[in-house]
Length: 166
Image (cartoon, rainbow, N blue to C red):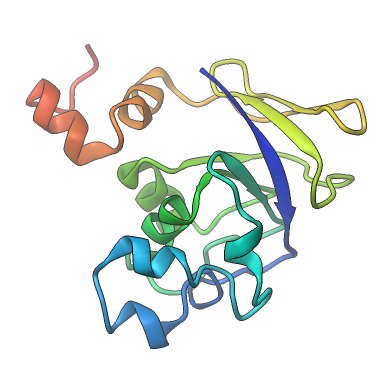
């Protein structure tokens, strides 16, 4: 499974309130509405820059903060299909997979906003097509790839009726 998109780069310690501010996530459950406000405290024009399939790229400790699922779901609603970061808060990582948002840990140094990127979930190969370099991420386990292909854990369980490897 290979993804392709444009990079949007942020730094370290991007918490879930930066991803989607509490002033929105407690007022609505409409993910399309929340998607319009993703990352706006850090970049007020972010939602107008994102195209479906884009990559969000960050440093250390991405997704720290609350354990609510609105953050990965709002990212998906904004058009982001994958987050690449040096490290993730574990609860965010698990919530992201459960919600159908691809997350991969890798060295993100040298990636700039606007770079064209590809990510191969099976091999873990991350390519920056703009600057012609490759990074290696830990490939995702087959069961996680299947969960992501189904759109998240709920859709996976609906289809297969269990959380066992098939």
